[in-house]
Image 1 (cartoon, rainbow, N blue to C red):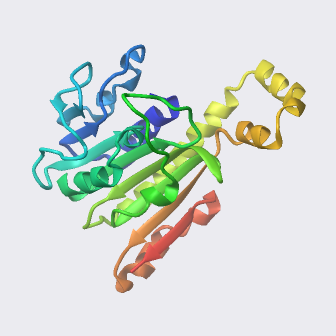
Image 2: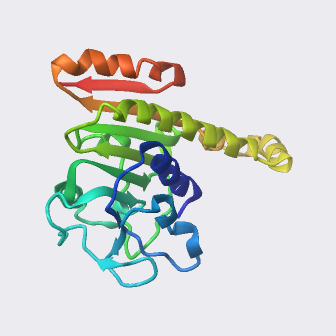
Length: 251
């Protein structure tokens, strides 16, 4: 699991305080990953069920995202990070996760975009931010890296009914994640900065931009609400523009 993805889940768990039971789809701990991919510690005190298509470390239950055996509305929280690119029937997988998600439940998703082909067991897709914004009533969509070609896309979604706490918690998450990225950028060693400057002329303009914007992220908060609720939502997230994030409210 990539460091930014693990910390995306960590910060989201801290800011949104999701309820159990928690189901992680794609929980198999790949060889050499050790405990880095184990997300259970971020959800202590809540039932946590690791699901994957194969038995192995980190897996409590065998499940196929194309046809889950879980009952309707049985999961309060779903985690599916860097997994959907390995699911051939990706639209069906999204429908299945929404089916088993309880009303008011949350789903955390990430997917690579500008990333090498990695077969676990196969690698089929690259999902855009627009793809992740569609299924649920409230979705915070983000991307890290160059806006036109990010290396990672994120989404945090809620199934109807959407709590009034979602918007302020989303704002808290965005601020915390941006602070995390600034800390990572600040840890860049002097030697790396010098090499980046000295050898930058050998790289294309696009390559230089990918390096420069590696630790930059943007977010858009998408809300589907009744017309009578629009004003209240706008008031709650009025500070988004100051952080460079956007708000999209639809009836």
